Length: 480
Image: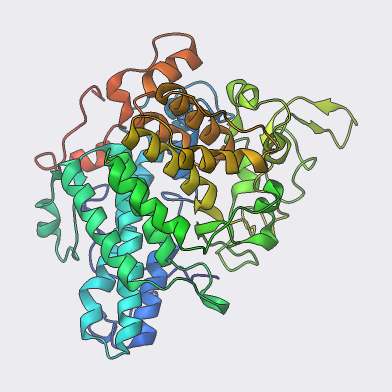
């Protein structure tokens, strides 16, 4: 499915300066009063919210940096100095970092697009069943965006209706993370009731009932409500809608977008329409020229670390499907030891214009979360927990974990399995934070006391503090 990048709404929340309380309207400058009238208008508005997921501040760039490069799994080519990538990777982030500024800005613009749908859909002339579905989609997307924000920054402004004036924007302040999580749960609970199980045709890729359930299960797991997490994730399993693909490598073929393992993925489409993805250009080795990717510049981002490469067990087929240890130089014919991921291969239509979607939730993730929730809720792994993780290991051609493993050992086994199963997909940092393992694992990675407890959340962008210093304050530990 190709979502048109159309941003609709009134005013965005707290951007870079007073002038950055930016008015957002349809590209044809149609007056908002004359919009949101019917099903066609509302579908365009919903598509605008989906379209925001593809921006640089969301899944187009920022989220894989925050979720993966921040961790021990990957790094970016700019390994030194004060470039935004290096600051994030080396835990030397300033509040002026461009990656977090973009993330805050584009994610709140996405929330604005969701709020516009929810505020105006009641007045549109349309079928009630379609109205409910659009509400469910907007609430799912808003929940997903807030989930990414609250995990990254901690307390954040909670805006659930359109901000209609600059003065109103100044009244917004950071709210406790617990309030944000409560809103996320409420949105996903309602979305689950309103969304369909599946779609066909051009609607493939929209949020479904299973996506809402899976994300809600992850939210419960993140907040430590293991009983609710296991129950909600079991609902996804019992849907019998999803299954592991037999071949792990097949997950990454562009022809297999929105496959049976996919709960939700961000949709990209190449072809010069502005809706393509830049992942393979970004992830190809920096100095590889056209040896790896034939069109456009290779940027050397989301590069596997030595720790990740070493994490794969002997015989794990996911290693060769996920990464290459280097490439053959097309000019010299020599092998260059410069690792990179294989998960997002495609020949772009032009630079940064490929067909690769971004996987947000897939069934293997659900199975591993379910095993984790069962382990925590029951004081050790149950037979069901072992079955869940072993299903993932079986596809990887690995031996099953033995029965009799204790709770602590099973938790580490889950951590390891998630690291290699979901590598490069933006989960590792949040997994380490959720389980309380971020500081010891990362200091082991750096072989020194680089990471502290306050680093588990990122600095608030300085631009936001400058705009609204009374309502937007800095996270502890960050002084610049």
